[in-house]
Amino acid sequence: MSKKGFLGGKDSNAYIVFYSTVMVVIVAILLAFTYLSLKPAQDANILNEKKDAIVASLGLEKGSYDSTIEAYVVNKEGEVIQTEVSPLNKLFDLPASFAAGEYPVFENKTTGEVVFPLTGKGLWDDIWGYIALEADLNTIKGAIFDHAGETPGLGAEIATAKFQAQFPGQTIYEGSNLVGIYVVKGGAQGAAHSVDAVTGGTKTSEGLQNMIKDCLDCYDAFIMGRTAVAFELVETVNAE
Amino acid sequence: MKNKTFQSLTNPLAKNNPVLVQILGICSALAVTTQLKPALVMGLSVTAVCAFSNLVLSLLRNGIPDRIRIIVQLVVIAALVTIVNDILKAYVYDVSKQLSVYVGLIITNCIIMGRVEAFALSNKPLPSLLDGIGNGLGYGAVLVIIGFFRELLGNGTLLGYQVIPNCLYEAGYVNNGLMLFPPAALIIVGIIIWVHRSTNKDLQEK
Image 1 (cartoon, rainbow over the protein chains, first blue to last red):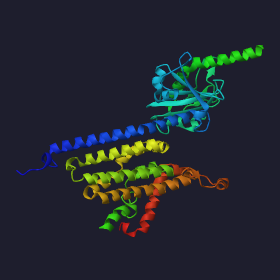
Image 2: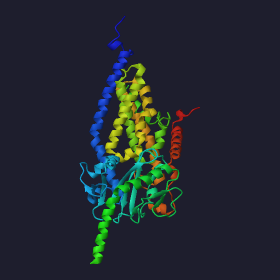
Image 3: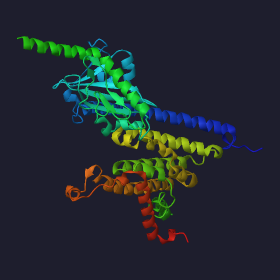
Image 4: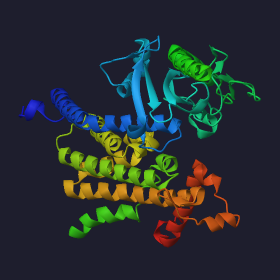
């Protein structure tokens, strides 16, 4: 028998196992290195995208976040609380933040308009968005929605400008009751607090309606606190 | 010899174009060409992956066990695509969002594995690298041509800048909505193939 070379030659089982092991280890190291070295730049991009979405819901220019927005976190009682992570970084895992009872608020420093982040479930996967309220904290100024994996052409339509254009001008309170926005199958036909659902996207539309209601509920106390202060101010001014 | 090496770069650009002659990579040519910019980035990404996978696998060609050679090819290609995807996410985030899954799907692009199997595994590293660059650029060139017409006729813009003057719109010109749908890409590919074959008589089937 002649010597066949390293581990019994190129086509022996030992060589194949050895070859694959070495290859996989090298590739794993390479990929881990790339991932770790590019992660900061990627995170910065994602953060920028979130900043742009927040200002876009207010109808402001991209990149104006840093100069216009003041961000803080409130709790279920509407009190501003201090958190380890910045309000913006909370958006990286918003569901966890909501579950922990920490709700980020993004306020336009000059106008008092407020943006609330939303998070919920569509038909297939997560949906999320930002809802901007006028300074009265009742009228919607703008809304932005996005999704991870809704059906293109059906549920995914919630991410289109056409769908989102229905929101500005709607109100979320009926008296002092928070009702949110009804996403109505078959068309809102001008009813209060209502927008048209997406045709063929019933489950996504329901998910969206629940998301808006559930998330805004968390801010109810905050909104009530703010508007009560404003109301008292008006009262005192009138009394004087 | 020198000439032959050079031909492995230039041949796929015209005479043996992967999209026009070998009809490979059509799927992504339809999907990412609604605008010029993603088409450009996709072309460059495929060129990079094709060039490096050819180079790496050509360097490894004498050591790869025959029985697992397809797996080895896939691991190399998949690793390269993952790196490209990470780079795009880090430096051209908006384009990487537009390209979405199609960057990952470069792995399954027939051009890349086709070139590795047909060329890199039986040729030296330098010609293999040139062959990879040539095929990537040949694919990219077709993408750019399609992207050019689709964005121009569908949106009236190029790379996001408006090029069709407003006075034309006022005179009643409208953008062609069909251009934004995949069938338009197929029609344009068809026209390009037609033009390509009429200028290269030897490609015509008898």
